[in-house]
Length: 337
Image (cartoon, rainbow, N blue to C red; front, side):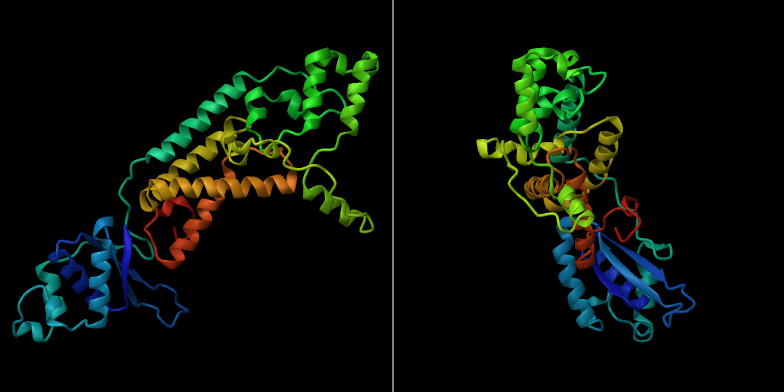
């Protein structure tokens, strides 16, 4: 459902709705009454005419533009003129073929239920399947050894392969765990010389943790020099390009994936229907790469989830609605959607 005309005159809105119906174009007329006591337009009715069928939108929009430019053109009368029409043409038209009116203050007409698109369904299933597999294959760990990052310790092998980056320092930790086990790492002094040497190698191997820590450190100590000698994009430089997008398919726990997938279903199916499946897929991939890269630059590789893409979807809908409303469901957010 898309907006085709906004009129300040109720009779003009009713007449346009009737004419569109005569042309076989399904539409709904929404009359909003200004109830703001302090507004100079208090009590004024604003008519919004909506095209129901997406395929008829362009035709309806052209008719509406023509009607607004020439509202008194005889062709817009829904029947031949009579003597009564000379006085109240719009009112007689309304009596003969009354349009469907919705008097609900500032609310828009209800949107018909829309089926879930194939792209939205594929991403929903992919996220759920990957979440189940990564959770079932994750190692059981009671405590992280001191001075070691928790990602190599807690994450499953699949999760490690889908993170935005997996630095060489984490590979060293994997080697330590596979060789000596977590129990020996709890007390590094019990490690053999080769293990201590490998652990010392990890301590001396830098890895990217993001600009955020550097920014915070600068505010705490403005004289601290800005150094950027830490290696970045280590796995991407090895040709593992899937990591640009794959973190969006990962989730940390059941609540994380539940809320993300609920919003994907609510907003994703509407975007897919209006954009078309290929443009919608391109939108998801591009925004996924952009938001993942931004998160990596700010906080390192320790991030998961579809949230970045969902935020891009909300921003797109907000901007698109301001330019030309597409009739998104009001229940999506508390705004003009």
